[in-house]
Length: 387
Image 1 (cartoon, rainbow, N blue to C red):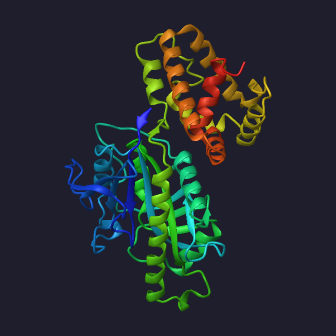
Image 2: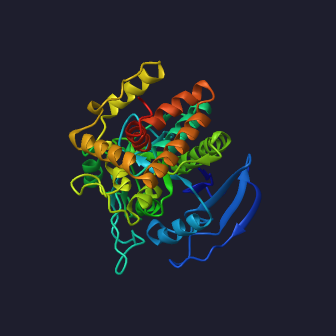
Image 3: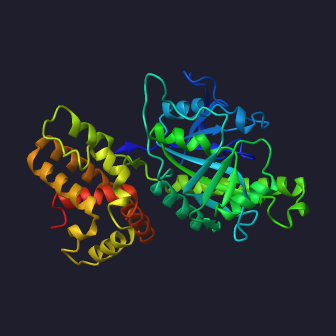
């Protein structure tokens, strides 16, 4: 388990974080240049919290001028494990009017002037962005919104444009027809860099207006938008306060990189090349190996006391091959077995921590059906925990 450190990036209208105690401002040097602002580091209800103003006070930085690499780098150096992005946006959907909050689960990147990776010549890496936000962190945000009676859409696609200009009418209509939910200018490459830095990331998109596709767009004034930014900022601060109050003080990592390292260190008994080269790749591909609805149903049945519900039929053909390979290696490789057991124990400890009340049962179910939970399901199944 890792000690939780919650990071908050404040977007338009959010330049500070009320309730932060024992505050110190710190400027952490970064090889990537100068971040947007000094970090405000403190704690709320005993949880370490690090706040960064994305545009700095006075909104002095436009979206294209933000040094996203430096921002994520200094947050990582400050120990942040989980990062919440609070971002103003426009809406493409009638059911997401001004004042609505959206927990973004997908992004569409239309930026073109920004450095978007920590990797490059001399150090090349390819990182999966299939599922760019943390299901666990989004579950905590959803629970916080329910507790604070803040209406919130649990999923949506955020298209990120370069800016600083807003969309043309033709662009806006195209984005709407493509099914996008909201539009903004700052979450890319922020989310990509957080993934590369192995920081769990989630976006709360706060709708200030309909984009120019809407027939009533011309009726919206600058004063209306500013009023909505301020109203959204007040709700966002309530949301963060509740999130911090209920957030677990320890967290399990959402990748299995440590497991992968143990597997790949000098072992000649590697998994076959046609299957999974490492458990790290398993964490990326697992969503395609287990049917989501089937996993949810099996866990519900298992929680009701049914046994022998987990079989190889839960997995796709590729998943069945991966399951067989992992089970074989678990039985044959002592170090691999110890690493898998440690991962399983840490995840089960997290489940126990969040399942102490009725509301926690909802969060636990979300964990179990997330990508991380599916990794746990396959590893625990292969280890014989469900026999």
